[in-house]
Amino acid sequence: MITKLDQIFDVLKSRPQKRLIGAYACDSHTLDAISEAVNLGIISATLVGDTKLIEQTCEKDGINISNFTIVHEPNDSIAAAKAVDMINKGEGDLLMKGLLSTDKYMRAILNKDNGLVPPKSVLSHVTVIENPNYHKLLVVGDVAIIPAPDFDQKVAITKYLINAAHGLGIDNPKVAVIAATEQVLPKMPACVDASVISKMGERGQIGKAIIDGPLSLDLAVDMESVEIKKMSSKVAGDADCLVFPNIESGNVFYKTNTKLAGAELGAFVAGAKCPCVLSSRGDSVKTKLYSIAIAALLA
Image (tube, rainbow, N blue to C red; front, side, top):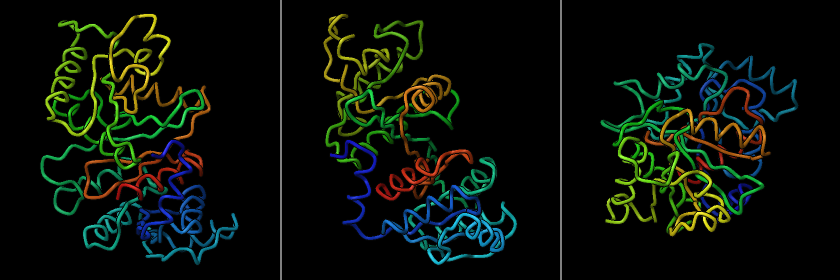
């Protein structure tokens, strides 16, 4: 079982290389992360973008340009469409966003004619967090794509988190469906949804996992709170996965981990034909490298 993000590199080194396609990957952080992943031997990389800009960035930052195959396309939207087309043609195993806006990247993925989303599929953001104050990795969602997931979308999010946990070697992950309280309160939709998802998990309708909810965040991750509140649960205090009720709660948790708790993380978009790395243009090289590694692990 993988308990630290950097352990993913060792696992990947023992497997066949995955092929990354970079959509308008011209910026320093993205090129540096992809180059490091190539140097580690976990991927091969094709960049669709402005050749001159890539050359200038590599020269400026001392990045080995020979680590990449470059497909010249100076227009960022067209570059994203070409990158998606390469995935559809079987020329790549994972997609990565470069120096283009999220809406342009997502537009290429969501294109009804040439995109990467199967009919009726739900796209969701999956984040793997290594918090120095928690005893193992946390797989959480959705923090970036679905503003107010309905019940079916919450079930899809839960399945994606379970799948990611399996990829990390967690055979039977413990999933906490988060709400403001552990009580089943009919007037709180998050509590109702969580209780139904928990029962579906009991009946084996969602996947191989132990699911409990509603659980407040403290009960999900803190054993002392579990003991004080005398909570009886196989998940409480030891969760592997956290399903958030809305984007506000998930996003605040995500940013609190990185900005105040010194956490490291990697993330990708699930639900497309391949894992799609959706890093912020401001993300660190390390975050982008971990995101590449997680996407390659699950591709």
